[in-house]
Image (cartoon, rainbow, N blue to C red; front, side):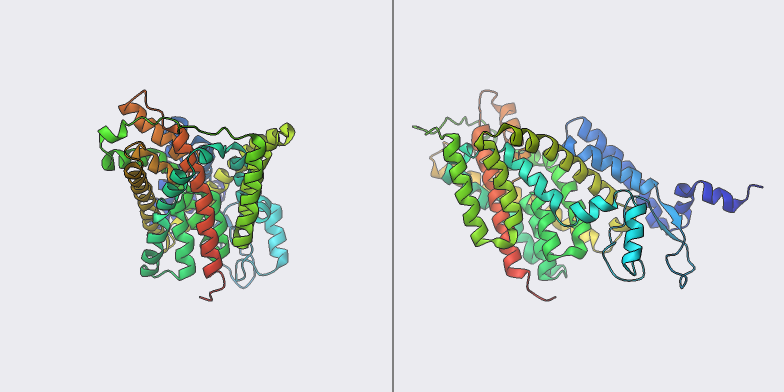
Length: 421
């Protein structure tokens, strides 16, 4: 005989909507729809498809697949709700996870749990992504305009430095504020790494917010550029530097190796990501084709896919409804906004220093979302002056932005990691 209880057990994804608080149920439905929207925008090329499509599908699936579980211990008779994907707090202590046996049970049941536990929550995937990014970077663009590139990149760190005191004013600790402020660096792997070091309890929401907003930079930054840079300046063409030296792959490899060692000396706390980035660059310039094909092919794309998928899976309604998430949403937005403004200020600075030879739009590429912001700069300029090519200069600022964001994150970790909250 079919009873109400049997129907509840038959379709728990639907019935769990009515067993939780109305706000959580509404949030679940909203996140399912948001996941579909992210997939659509990724497919249309408005947002970064490599991240947004797996993230959007994961976000929709995780909020649809909530089910009932029996309590983990006999002391609590209340049925809990959860999913079979993963348990973000599997390493925590408390009522949910009491001992190693519970952890091993979760590792066996939750199908993405081993990847999350052994590759995501320790920053390994972030290092793989950074390695892949490095294998795509040509430091020759930086060497062509070193002063311009690094100056713009430093200006673009404005978002991180402004957001830090604002986050403290919102009531976050200095370590939490530093982790949140790195969202302005617009460097996803670095945000993951820094939040794990400084605020592991906020790692999941910071990661979700960071990548959600990084995907939106491609759609939002063109409006910021058009607002702050007049058309006559956006149309300025940029010629290659006079007497530009052509650097060999060997020279680029030596430079990358030296820079890697120097930065590891200065900022050992960020050495894993610094090493991963420059290892990718060195492999690119070394001419070892099997390594190149491995790093910028399977390693990069599989890591990116799993990164997007994990971020989507972690974006369940309970995480989003955490009271600390709303300030995070606001602070992440502010951080990226000020980063874009800072980058454009750097573009204006170089415009005046160069006597009008540098297009200020290059400044937006100082925000180190490689190569998204460089493509944004070229796309905006091409609409006003189809013959203007600023992509080489934008890529130089973009690559420098990656390096400066690693430096800033390393400084934050070095300054605040030992502080006891």
